[in-house]
Image (tube, rainbow, N blue to C red):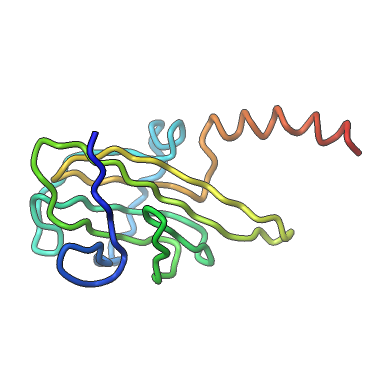
Length: 148
């Protein structure tokens, strides 16, 4: 698998913010609940041409997001990012990390590694834990109770 660095600054060959007008209920499918993301092919548009990848990220509105280690500047609970042109037929791996504090002050950090190809879109839900993350929390809870 090839890695191609996704940049979050505006410019040729770098990750850019895509339109945030669409807010469809994309996060309810079982695949997203299990893995935290869903990959699918999309119809090219002028804002998201063929050969690019569209990242749709749902997070708490106060969250900070990093894509491959580069901090993004966008805000809001639904954010869209567009990759630079990618080579057809090759796979690329992007790491999306979100970080925020809950009302009780607890810091939450969630990371998703997604494998994509040119022409795909990815729906990523960092706001909800995956089934695996929930299981890990449940396993840690009895240990935390014993430590008290």
